[in-house]
Image (tube, rainbow, N blue to C red):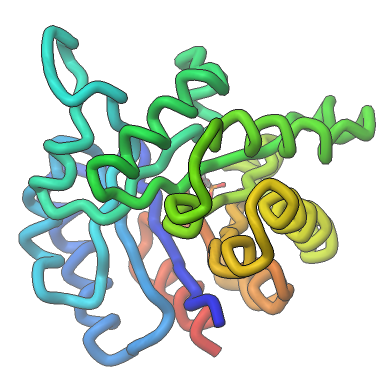
Amino acid sequence: MRRPLVVGNWKMNLLRHEAVALAQRVAEWAAAHAEPELALCPPFVYLEAVGQVLRDTRVALGAQNLYPQSGGAFTGEISPAMLADLGCRYVIVGHSERRQLLGETDEFICSKVAAALQAGLQPIVCVGELLSERERGETRAVVTRQLVQALGGLPSEAASRLVLAYEPVWAIGTGRVATAAQAEEVQADLRSTLRSRYNAPAAEEVRILYGGSVKADNAAELLAQPDVDGALVGGASLKADEFLRIAARAAS
Ligand code: PGA
């Protein structure tokens, strides 16, 4: 039984007082609702403030990125140990915005996954195809390549600590959501890749989230799919009411 997980990816949004207020609303809701598991990923600079709000609550803290080195002369970067030290449980890795805007490669993403796990963090590994790739019928090949390369030589004990997120690039921030059938098709494929790469029990344990224009009014149908174990929510996670309506759909 995989526990549903709904993650708010705040991206480069909110100021400190807004971040704290939003985290407070989510924590209050979570105090009265045991399910689903919730996590919030604020910008680095608000991890500490949001972490203080979330301490001893049911809401986990996550980061949006990390640098795959334990320390040293990497100006402007943040190590996995720093994130763990701030109380992070999760870290988003391989988001399409970082792949596209910041040139992150599969190889670099692989080193981030390994570094996150080594520091005791759970990476939320994002994969997803461009619209042109979908139109050329390449979705399966693209997401399989991204998944296999992100995992590298990871052993199966570590694989079960991963979270995956299928985020079709054409659905991120566009209001154009994948249909439930499209999400399920790709996510079932991802699980079958995990099954052949590792083994059935490990593949069954990994939660696979859907992300890309998730809103309260489309969440229920997506989350009802057998291989959709939660949601990675961008825009709609910035409004407490909307985010909590999505969370409520994941619990039922
Ligand atoms: P969106 O973003 O919900 O705004 O489409 C999702 C994401 O990028 O994780």
